[in-house]
Length: 402
Image 1 (tube, rainbow, N blue to C red):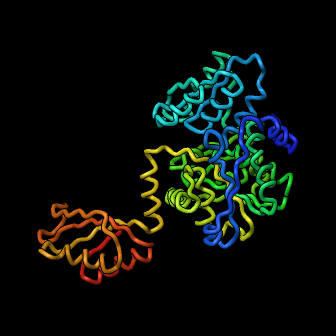
Image 2: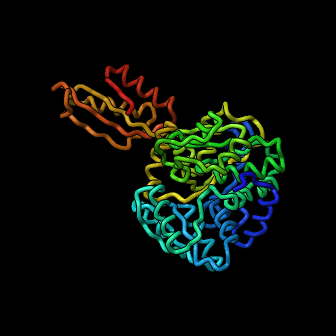
Image 3: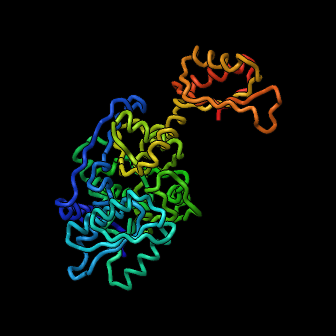
């Protein structure tokens, strides 16, 4: 397969999928622009049908299959599954999606609701992929790859065309990277139309194959992936996408899960938008990797907003910890009447709010006349936490921020 991607192919994809996808909005954020020191806009693909950009590529790929094809099949745990299922249903085709056995029920149900036959088999994407490829051969189904296909990449590249129309002054675009289809498509469109645009790819630290490939100049595979940004948890980027990424990207950075959670929380608070982990990495990079950014008009691509509801509370809590608005302090204090009250008085004086207190005098290694107190506190920021710890320490207590 030829590995270059021309602007005309992306424009053709835009015309082909126009009746299936929606043009997503671009929004300026004054508060986040103040945080970064330069204008920041968000391309909200979380407002796309099915909740992510994946529909664009899936629609363009399915539109190009032969009319006598009995159906399509894909392996996915989430967004690609829903994109393929919806696009196939709109075009009158049957779809089969192979998902991991442990896939969230909400994602499996959403995929079924878009008209797909869902098979849950395998423990991870790689095992699902093998099952899907075997079924494709047995049943003569068309396999729809999640990213390593020029027609998929061209579909994702339509975001770049929209972005330049909505924000012609943009000088820097920040894009999430998993398998690389989204970033490769957007990069191909932007570099063809406005070569001066700086392109920054972002990966999670626990799934950083493209980051290491970019540093080494050749395709590199991760040994394993572990990140809350499951939408970009890919061990090996595609051959086609890697060539395009190495050719077009100006920088690749990584962010931690704690930073991703913090960005998800900030999106809820400042953008009033629910963003999935993969969609939040661009904002995390702008906030926590400032040295990798230039102070120019910037667009951050929010790739999706499909978050498992069971994870939202944990992600919010993680984000609050990361930003210093939630603290868990472990104290060792003399086990005498009134000492816990003294601790609470110090906390109250410094303006922290107590969420919970656990009092345990049976910890292993604890002296008989001492007890361990664990407090969960609402705080203002890390400086506030430091002042609390200092005040408690000055009163003769042993304090640890856990």
